[in-house]
Length: 504
DNA sequence: ATAGGGTTAG
Image 1 (cartoon, rainbow, N blue to C red):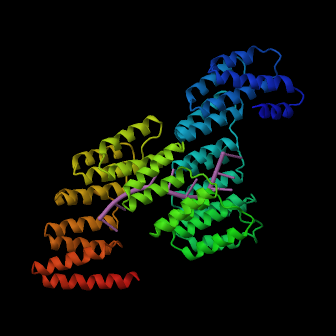
Image 2: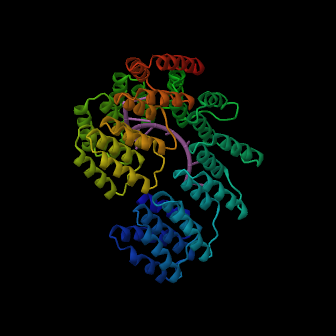
């Protein structure tokens, strides 16, 4: 705090004392939760320059936003206007950004109207925050509209605007459009930054073009940049996720030889890569090695370790790991809650799982599609199909529409309790299907000795470019043979062989 | 104000 006061005093060196004093007072009042008193105080201070009161108003709004008290932040702005302490674009940008982070882009956009009413014109930062908000919710059309609106308002997008828009398009699965934004940026003579290239590398890797990501990484020097830690972490993760472990290992070695020092993100990335490839022991070596080197395991690292232990079936150690994490004072976030809920479901402690869901929502972390899928799977495993159905309905009500995983869990659950017809009904309602869907339904039909129906679905599956486990292939063929449909069995066998040839 | 790591199913 004294440092902040000093910096503040230095910045406004003509008014060091009143500014530092006012700043200190702001914080004092915030600390004793007397925020409402603040605005009249500022405004009654007759001699105080207008800029100072605006600055203090912004600080006040920023503190309230950090405390997630957005209603009060808005009320303070309104009070300020009434009392002659006027907000500026920074005040509104702070509020808009907080709305984007905590509520959503729609609510944030409404602030824009109130901002204009107050006579404050939005700037590039205002729109950049809104585009980032749309990106967080994966709303590509919204981002593009906001970008367009910014141009219409006569504002000139900067490198941040382009980077954010590109990120949005990649994240929502439109790499081609993201490339176009990059080209647009170049044609408008906006100089790309390293973040631009980090975003491009990440986007390429995540949209199935890891090799181009690697090529871009290799071209950085020629573009006038040198890779920094974020770049290394990005490309290592991208290569791991797309199965190019050898390349990833090479870059990791280069990182070791560079001036960059790996951080917890690097460790977590490599650890996760090991888990993904079934090398659990090696993954845990990295996990403990990281802690021995003095890095604190954070919520990401614990989350990866716990879910790996669950996958290994080692629920005892998973629980111990959860306890260790809580003992270390790690704050739980959404993904971490989901992991612990998953653990409870695996242990069959559904009551406790639902208790955790409540706890999570009370903490202001809404459940997401992962939460619902985990619960649906847990309920199905315990045979509570009706409750699982109810959760699926609730999930749809909450707007998580096409969640393949949740549907697949329910289909599998229905098949396991012998309700194949209900499973088929759900199956036909589904817009998209994948390998898991077909495997469950085909297995379910086999279990009911409906081999010809199973065979038909299996052929449909191949037609749509999906495939099922080889054990399922065998089950259908063996079933057809034992039921006397030898010709069907033969034909299916041939079709499967051709499908294999076409695929590889 | 933008970029990097963690969570679900056969």
